[in-house]
Image (cartoon, rainbow, N blue to C red):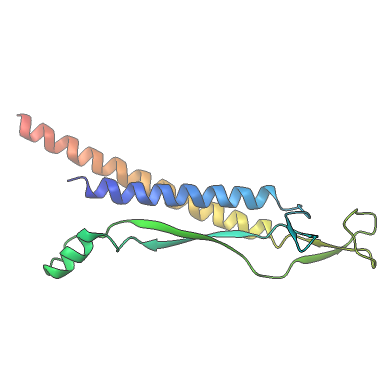
Length: 149
């Protein structure tokens, strides 16, 4: 009965984390000292969320074994947050405290345009899941009204 709620809740949680990671990327778009590696500062690396279908639950194996394919799925889960390994951007800023001998500064590999697209995608997905949650809730309320009268 509450399978739809659980599926939608997992998607809402995943999309919320995705929006948090995009916000973190946008906040660190100019961070030149993100992490200390071998005694030297490295700029902030863009982070991304990996989301997979949540199929490792017992109920999914049981449904497959019983030959039932009527269940729509078990939602999603966040498997990990990965760092984007694209190279850092170089900018000529000889007055910057982190500039090298030639005057170039390594900047994070965060592209604000790409982050905005990811944020819009996560927002739309979140809104779609809220709509699904409300529709499921309304259907259950109507079913209760039928049972009452």
